[in-house]
Amino acid sequence: MGVAAPHGDDLEMLFAALMRGESAVHPVFPELPKPAAAATVDFDAARWFTKLQLAGVDRVSQLAVAAADLAMRDAGLDTHAVASERIGVFAGCGMGGAAALEAGYRGNGRVPPLTIPAFMPNAPASHVAMRHRAQGPVLTYSVACASSSLAIAEAAKAVQRGEVDVAIAGGSEALIVPGVVLAWQAMQTLAGFAPGEAATAVRPFAADRAGFALGEGAAFVILESADHARARGARRWATLSGWGSSCDATHLTKPDVEGQARALRAALHKAGLQPGDVGYCNAHGTATRIGDAVEFEALATVWGGELDRLRVSSTKALHGHLLGAAGALEAVITVMALQRRHLPPNAHCDVPDPACRLNLVRELGATAPQLEAAISSSFAFGGTNSVLLFTR
Amino acid sequence: MSSLKELQDLIQEKYGIPPSELDPQASMREKGLDSLALAEFIFEIEDKFGIEVPDDNPNIDTLAELAALVDQVRAAKVA
Image (cartoon, rainbow over all chains, first blue to last red):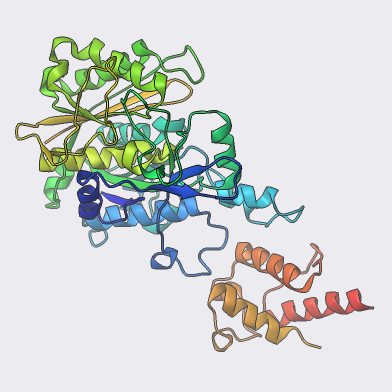
């Protein structure tokens, strides 16, 4: 696994920061009329690109290349050869090169010639493919907040079908630019905050929750079959045992209980597990008034009497909403929680919403000694829902 | 006046390639400045000198050729 995330690119340090409840959300663009906050990546492109290589490469692709490279190293595949046509890239991306596009619009009629290849949403996947000579399927999934979760599921299917031996799966997003932030603010889903309180603005499942904060970053996991991993002596973080997706097909932005429940059930069914077998849920939890309420109902519908045994937290409170990369970053976090049997908190929830009767991880340093299976949920604008189920 | 030195400085600043590593008579493409990077570089040159380099150039492959073209455009602008 590899990340270029708001809490850094070291997996151990990232997880430790989450366990301590540290927020990476901070004010951005003080010149905007309404205060804005986001979780950004302190990124040194020079670690992966010469200045020449950066020509026409938007930040969203830079982050993807970094995270994918770190994932390949983590998997020991930087030194182990795989036939190039047996490697695939499955990348989620919501918007593509937002910075390139905005620079084009703001250039007073002078548009940099590489604006299009820098902006195109498939660029991150292409750059990753070039770095690792991935000559198998190189696909980009653009499904808003579910993009990279779906990318991981589709990669798993490709591995299972025998199309690829190694799948580099995940996503990236880098749209923290003024025009895009203004657009999100206009939709009134971003959390407002008092001066000095941006870090705690995002309060999933809290009675006073008021929306989310944008995040940027990239995360990738390397998927391979058990046989392939065993044959090369690979170290395994977890098994992706189940995945489920659905579309609400009801409303463009409003979430739907039945749609989410279908995806949750499908993931359980694929893994051959019952709700009671799953001990932790890394929720979609955007902290919008309606989003969290619907997510609670969907979980309650599927888990029924076992709901109390499911510990739930939304780490978006701490790393922001990475949109196209959210599914992948949260999958990485879920896998680490599963492997360590430590649960990141559902932060900033001083008073939980009584209508969302979930067993929230409110304490820091939570452990789950019996944890065997965990899920990561992503419920997107446009109505597509994606759930990933990992087992030890 | 020759723009060569200014172009060399610009290449060093933007792309980290020092003048010693790019012989003005050598192919830029072989040094990693492919057509995409060259397009971006010309855009930077236009910004720097406040000129417009015409689109219809015969294949510019060396820095010397590019400098000659830039000289031409700058001279035409002054004239």
